Amino acid sequence: MSTLTWYTITVSPRWNQMVFISDAPDNVTRYLVPHGDSTPRLPGMRLRDVYDYRTYALEHVPTGARLVVTSRLDGKLQGVREGSHFDFRTLEDPLDLAEERQLADVPPMSEAAQTLLAGMVARMSMTDPKGRWATGNWYWDPLGRDDGRGRDDDSDPQRRLWGAGGEWEAQWTGLPYPEDVAASLTDPRVGISGATLGRSKRTYDVTLGDSVLKIYA
Image 1 (cartoon, rainbow, N blue to C red):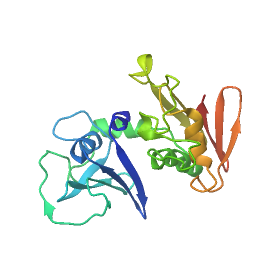
Image 2 (spheres, rainbow, N blue to C red; image 1 turned 180 degrees about the horizontal axis):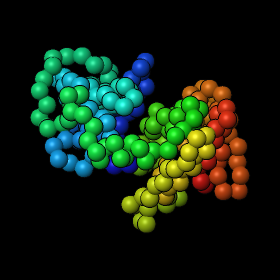
Image 3 (cartoon, one colour; image 1 turned 30 degrees about the horizontal axis):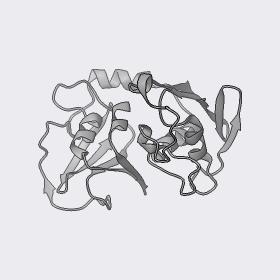
Image 4 (cartoon, rainbow, N blue to C red; image 1 turned 60 degrees about the vertical axis):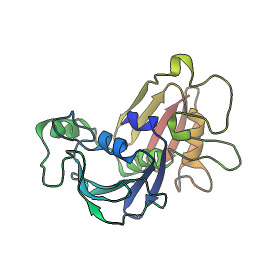
C-alpha cells in the first residue's frame, strides 16, 4: 500500500465511498486489486466496473467498502462502461487462501481507531491554506521547507503502522513531518471531530474517545 504514495493522488472522501483522483489511475488500481496470479494487493479488493476516462469502481468484499480510482478531475462515477485492459479479479472471484491469511493477520481495532486510521488516508493530500502544515501525498513538502527531510537516506522511506484495539502506533522516515500529520487530524476546520492532540517526549498523541494514535516524532 505504501507504493501508492509515490503517485500524486487527490483523496476525495464522498458519501459511502472514497475517491482517488490520479493521472495514473491504471497503475494505482494495479496496486490495489489483485490481478492474474499476482501477489495479493489489498486483500479482498475487487473490480466492480470500468468506465471511460480510466475510471475504476472497486469494492472491498470483506467490508463492503467502495473505492473509485479515476482520472476525472470531478471524481464522478459516470460515463460509458468499458472492459478492463488488465486481468483484475472481480466480484465473481472469491477470496483465495493468501488473502484470507492476510485478513486474519490484521489485529482487531476499535471504532474510534478505525476513524483515526481512515483519517490519515483521507488527509493524505492536504495543505493548510495558512501554511501551518501539509501532508504532500507523503512524498513531498508543498510548503518548501528546505531542511533536508526526505532526501538522501530518506529516499527509500521506511514505514511502520501497528497496534490493536484502541492503541495504534505510526512511525516513518522522510516526509511528511509527523507534526503535520497530527495537525491535519486535529485541525479545527478539517480535523476529525472530537480528536485532540497531546505531546509526549517521543510522540504526538491523537486521541479520539477511548482510542489513541501515537505518531512518532
